[in-house]
Image 1: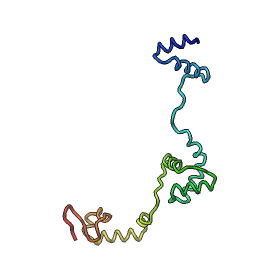
Image 2: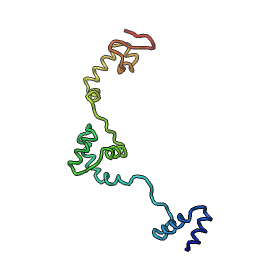
Image 3: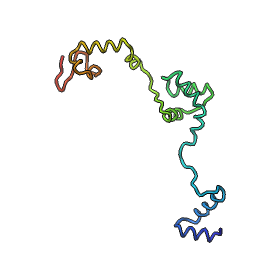
Length: 149
């Protein structure tokens, strides 16, 4: 094609001549006018190559921070940033909540029995099970604006 042909095509389609020349060069080099991939994830393949190592470290100590996990991974030969770890876990739907003593205690059998005993012994709590886990001080139950003792 000649420069005049490029200019004529550009005028016909309302684009710049340089754009038509680039499209022609792309067609000559790649065989297609299709756009190149844009944006998107271009680096996760590096971290995904170490997926098993990352999941093994995560399963071994589920309550460690991202920085602690990054240090353990670096000892295993995997160098990553904290943000990379965050995106990895988000991409795989893995939540990373630290287990506190309070949350672990709530599932103990003796704690469950104690809560059930309190609910059964207090008629107001038995009638309103949601109050058993409320922040109302022990022995008090709030219903509307009245406080029952």
